[in-house]
Every structure is written in structure tokens, then in C-alpha cells.
Length: 371
Image (tube, rainbow, N blue to C red; front, side, top):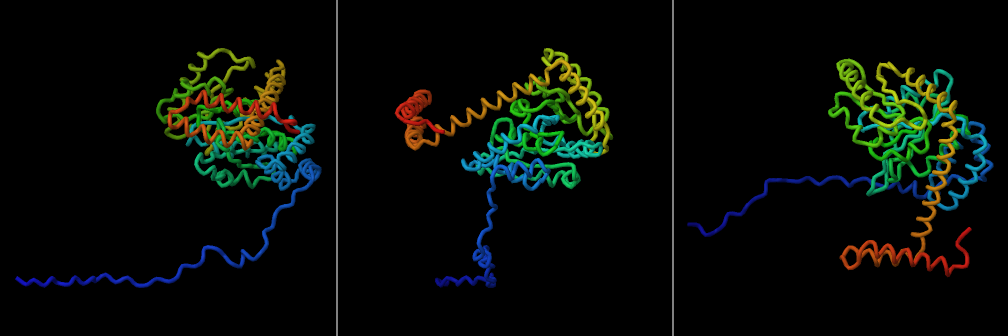
């Protein structure tokens, strides 16, 4: 037997590739970055009152900004715009993913603009809990409405807030109303179970549902049905029409199980097809009927007052959290206690108490709490 091992010859030949192009354009790096100038509050207010959409968008960006200088400027703008706000119908629209919210809003919005209304759509886009980023693709899903001169679409990241509603949505509503939009539509992320935030800032809360998607009465398990002023079964067309009619009867029966609303309004169930434009105008007629009822009995104005108080409470809560976690001593102590809690060396409740006591001590020893 030959003791010499045969030498293996690799028949695979890899050709050398070309050098990849640089991922960064060196020429662009040489050019100075153009930053948008920040103007006085009067500049934005005048532009908003004049219907300038570019300036409106800039003002909303300030409202959404987390920079303190931007927040102070945004507060001034909102205060100036309050005198021209409050004259719109605020509609919240939610529903399970895939129900066709964007398609419905486009059909509904076009129906309104064709009858002389100015529509602003605040489309809340879900933010990633990991990266905090969002797609903001609602304009691409509503191409016809976004090109309508009487419509304005503003996609905003939800920033991980409860119910999928961006923290600054209330301020954005005021700016849009001051710009002359008489119908404000808020589209939520469609998580289905935690939409209380949008309910606390709208006049009419609309729940979009599907028939034939399995477990038609799944909404009964959720408190969201109690908040709904109307249930709209979308995609009621073609082979799905019979299933939609059956689901309508089921929802109508289910709504009778809930206690009467303080608004004296009995929620309705309607069918529509966003693609075939059927039932869209009837939905606006129903909303108008609701507004007439609640304005006549005074509920409309009482609800607006409660929403303003809710906005104050939410903003105060936000300021307190910001003040708490922005303190360096709190931040250091928080990191120390985190490790102890994770290692089961300290209970979460005692750790929270220690942080709160430290915060109270800082406030008591500080000469000024803040402006």
C-alpha cells in the first residue's frame, strides 16, 4: 500500500471582485449642512392662520420635538392658536390590523373634501420599542387623499405611548384647527385593546371591524366596544356581503348588553365598502346626527372640557417624569438599584420608595424647583 497521501487539488477558483464603491459620498461631506432656521412664534402663527402647510408642518415638528427650546416655542404657538381652535369635528378611527383603515380614511376623506370640507388626517404610526423608529408610510397608502388640496396628512410616530397615540397629538389638533381644517381624523395603530388615549381627545369614536375574519364578537372581550360611538364593518362587498350582514346583527345584539352612554347616543352598526364607495356618505350623515344630539343636550361641550382637563393631567404627568429622570442623582441611584432588583437583593417596591424619597429630598434642598 502506498504510504504517500494523494495531494488534494482544489478545483474551485474564485475570481477577484472589484472594489465596492464608497458608501459615503465624500463630496457631500464637504458641503455644509443646511439647517432650517427657527423663527419666532409669531412667524408660525401667522403662517398657520394663513393656511401655509409648510409652516404648519414645521410647527407640528416643534410640537413633536423633545428639545426643551422647541417645546417652549411650541407652547407659545399653541397658546396663540387656541383662539382659532375648537371649531372642528374630531373623529377617532381604530380597528384591528388589516381591517383597511387607510383605505377607509382615504375614501371617507375624499367624500368630505368633495362636499367642501377641509380634512386633516393625523395618522399615528407605530414606533419600534427597540429602535424607536417608525415607517411613517401613511401618505403612500393614501395617494389620492394626500394629493387633494383640501386635505392634509400628517404621519407621526407613536413613540411607544399607550393606545398608539403620539404624546403631542392634542397640540397638533389645535394647530390644524387654527389652520382652518374643520374635520380632524386621528388614525391609531390598530392594536385594538388600548385605545383609551385617542378616545379622550375626540368627539366621535369609530371602530372598524371585519366580517368573516373569525370570532366576529371578539370586540366584546375588549373595553373598546364600550367606547365606540359606531361600529363600521368594512369590506362589505362581493362574497363577504352576507357575512357582513350576519356580523352586523351580532354586533347590534351585543351593543344592547352595554349600559346606556352618558351622551344619550345609541351606538350604531353600519356596513361599508371602501373600494366600491358604498356606505361612506351614510357614515358622515350618522356622525352629523351624533353631533347634533350631543350639542343639543350639552354633552359635546362638557366632553370637550373634560378632555382639556385630561390633557392638563397628562402633560403634568409627563413633566413630573421628565423632572424625575433628568436629575443626575436620580439617574445614578436608579442604575444602582436596578442591579439590586435584578439580582433579587431588593424588592421593586422598596427600590421605588428609595428613589422617590431621594427625589423629595432633592426638591426640599433645592432653592428653586424650576421655572
